[in-house]
Length: 132
Image 1 (cartoon, one colour):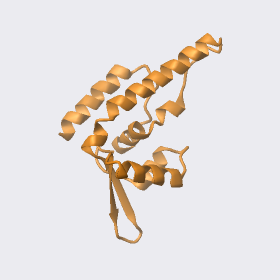
Image 2 (cartoon, rainbow, N blue to C red; image 1 turned 180 degrees about the vertical axis):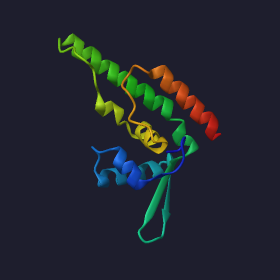
Image 3 (cartoon, helix red, strand yellow; image 1 turned 135 degrees about the vertical axis):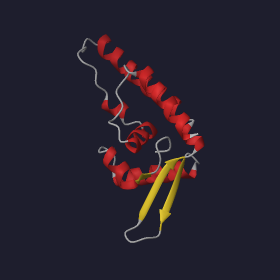
């Protein structure tokens, strides 16, 4: 969404299997009310609704990525501290709302937990340059 273009509701829904249709719709409407997402409703049969990040919404991407990375690192360190170690995988951080929407719009797989952070930031910067 936004940095990669327009995204239909059904595509967003498929990209976030753990989110109910009702909750996704509610959150998207709230993001639209807050001016972070543009919501375009087409009066057709069947109804079509498209979303994309506004310029203001795009400014949140680096912040959301940083929060996601912090949370993943915090959980990894907590697991190590508690002696549970092992391979770290945090799918609940991979589904952060706006980054997941941007990934879905770009046709990319869900983002990885902390690890490829610099590559992700470079990719985001390239996408932002293209959208300007």
